[in-house]
Every structure is written in C-alpha cells, then in structure tokens.
Image 1 (tube, protein in one colour):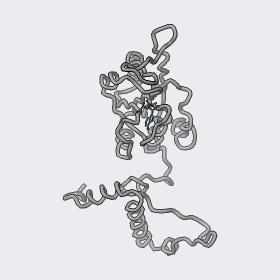
Image 2 (cartoon, helix red, strand yellow):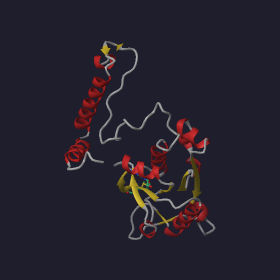
Image 3 (spheres, protein in one colour):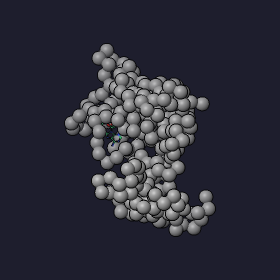
Length: 240
Ligand code: SAM
C-alpha cells in the first residue's frame, strides 16, 4: 500500500514544494508515496470563508476555529487509511528519528498546519491529535514544519533512498551523531585526510569512525550522549 500524506493547510500550493524534487520527487512519481492537500478555507461555512476568530480572554492575534478545522480533518481522514493525525506546533513533543521511523513504518500521516496564534485547543483534544514540534523556535506557519517531517519520513520508505544513501549508519540511527566524511583530494589546502581512511584496513576504519561518532556526540550533544551511555549500561541493552 502506498504511504499517504494528507496535509490540512491554508496554503495547499506549498505542497509538494521541495518534496517534488530529488529522491522524494522520484519516489512520488514512482508511487512510493502520495500526497493530497485539504484547503481549510474550503471548509468554512460563512460567505466570507472565515477560518479564524479573536481569542477568548483577549490578547493579540487570531485563533483557528475548531469547527472549520474539524471538518477539514474529517475530510483528510476519509482520504486515506486509518493514519495518525499530527498537529505541528512549537508546544509539541520534539520530532526525533524514533518518531520519524514509527510514522514511516505506518500507512502514512495526516498533518495539520497552523497559522496565526494556532488552533483552538478543543479540536486538538477532541481528535486526539499528536502535537509535534520541529524545534525550539517559532515559524509563521506549520507548512515548513510539515515539509520537514515529511522529508524525514519519505527518505525511509522502501525504494526511495538509493543504496548509496544508507540510513543504517547516519546520525541518530543508533543514538550517536555520525562520524565526519572526507573525499578527494586527499590533501586540500594543507589539510590532510585522516591517514587511517587511506589505509584500506576496514576494521581500523570502522574503529576510527566509531570513536569519532562517540567524540562528536559527547562534545556536541551531551544530552544524546547521556542517553546513549545510559542505554548501553542498562541490563539487557545489548540483547535486542
Ligand atoms: N502562538 C503559538 C505559540 O506561541 O506556541 C505560535 C503560533 S505560530 C506563529 C503559527 C503556526 O506555526 C503554529 O500553529 C504551528 O502550526 C506552526 N509552528 C510554528 N513553530 C513551529 C515549530 N517549532 N514546530 C512545528 N510547528 C510550528
């Protein structure tokens, strides 16, 4: 079955956008994944096609109406098999590779993109939306966040990534950042490639890469390193 994304948005013309290019674009043309968009404005019921209103309690900005968003989400549900529904929001759980892997392994995803101050809380609760953030900063809309989430999932779908771009060794595959990469020329501006990489000794290369992956994680991401060390130390951690 084709992995299907349904994107609920006020800006359907933003999709597939960059996902129509490169590996994701080829995957789309090859039918490895599919995308449809639902224009939230099309679900407004008044003649002005109103999708937002002022916040109860006062304050700046506008809030997306629950009834309009709910109708759009219902239409998205009907567009594909039973899929998890995600609201992109800076208030959500951080997107990570484990969640990406889970979503990519399922039938697809429904993505709700907010605008303005965001979506009325009641539709999030009523529909049990999973709230996901792509980082600790604020975008002007959920569409770029949806593109990020989709890109990360699509490249893991069977047949999308070429053999040359393996997901097995890259950053976050095993809780570590990846080791650094080098290519020709072996000497560039007086900077030599680490000699072990030219040695042809596969076991030594693998050892060097593991050491460098651990060093990068320890130095750059102490949070990931702490999790990695705890996981490795846990009883039975190596069993599965
Ligand atoms: N008032 C909201 C807050 O402070 O949490 C921010 C609203 S933001 C201007 C408009 C929309 O952009 C949000 O509803 C959400 O869909 C999207 N968005 C902004 N930052 C995001 C992030 N870091 N991750 C995912 N979505 C984000």
